[in-house]
Image (cartoon, rainbow, N blue to C red):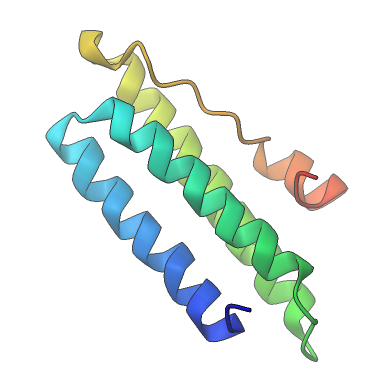
Length: 101
């Protein structure tokens, strides 16, 4: 089993990788990395909760939703990015309904 610290690190590393890929216009890789990041966050959400963590996960979900929305806007402005379609719910949906199942 992957430790919580590794899952948190994986979510953050995937975010860094997304920034690099988007900056290079590598939209097919952006889509794959975004999906991996969502999987890491889902695994983190499913792991044994720690005291006070609800706010931490809620903030992380909101940050990821905001990041995905920003990437979607950037992708729309680039013709070669037509392959990128975010599959993440909005921040308000995540805060209301929790992570995707």
